[in-house]
Amino acid sequence: MVPLYSFGYLKNLLEKLTRDRHAAGLKGDFIQAMAIDKDSKMIVLGVVQGAYHSMVRDLTKMHSLGLITNDFKFTNDKISITFLGNVVGRSFLTTETLFIILKLMEKNPERVFYLKGEHEFNDTWVNHTLKRELELGARFLSREKIPLFKQVSEFFNTLPLELYAVAQFKKTSQVLPIIVLSANLQDRENLLKKIDEKSKVAFLKHATTHKPAVMNLDTPLTVMPGSNDLEIVPVATVRDIRKRDGHIKMDGLRKLYQEGHTVAWTILSSPLATYRHGLKFFNDAFCVFSFGEAFAQWKITLYSRNIMSANQNFSVRQENLVSSEVQENELSLSLLLFREKGLFQGTFLSGIKALY
Image 1 (spheres, rainbow, N blue to C red):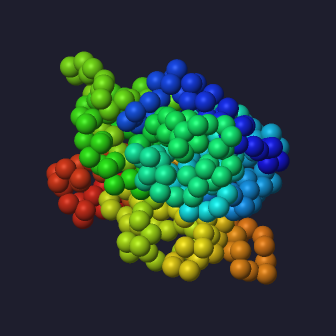
Image 2: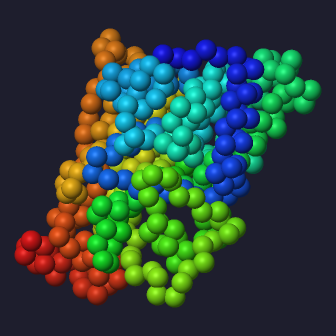
Image 3: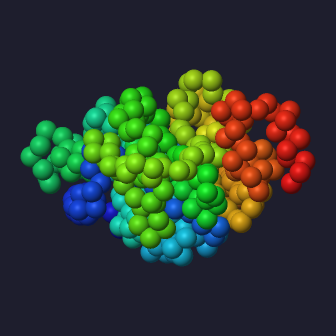
């Protein structure tokens, strides 16, 4: 299942994908959006940090679940995969891990989303093991001080800052529910301030299932007067967090908080030595988001395998992806907006809920 690898293959694939992504307008600081429907399945992984063997075990499990074929293709066009940044990092098989992600991107154009994390931003990767691996293994391919520096840097510049999964099939005349996925990137919030809210609404309204939408932060959309009659409602957010900031022992999936109509999740996917010793995290882990006509059918399923356990099978844990408040307001999600705007209090909202 794992493709043949060499530094020459890595170089060629970096150059090919960069050309393809530039042609699709994926360059610089940008965000992407894709539409989801009731049959969509979103695979999501937290930071991988070059953990090659963990990544292979995750892919093998995805294969057994019928999500991916032997040649790295998804089994249907409703499946996507998102990496929450920091694919490269501290492990000693970082180039091989990166190559696997690139093969997934090559085999599944427009269905693999590799978000820009701290290690992919502003060439921070040169402070980690990827640099050393290239110096040792790719020196015969390049005369640069860091071999393949140009190819790696240009490819990382084609990665999005944030991904929005847009539930067009749940859109009402007032509300468009979305899921927000983001990496741990210190400058992300400042960069996203370049986009005004009207441009973002117009952008998300036109996300389709056929082709993920892209919006460059330096060239926001031109918005026609009166064209934004929808409120964007983030019913769930998924983000990587700094592991040293309030980390709590976890099996790969943790709910960060629930506030009103929004649930925030974080995912951790690889049992790096740093995480094993500092965080007591020993799991291979990934999540699958599934949907349905009703919000109560929106699920987040964790597949997790403790590498220290005698039982080497993946365990399964399932949670509601969105809050109970969203589920209970199935017929009138816009009620949430009124409460958020302070037009009435939660006690009154509870009485309204009883009507449905």
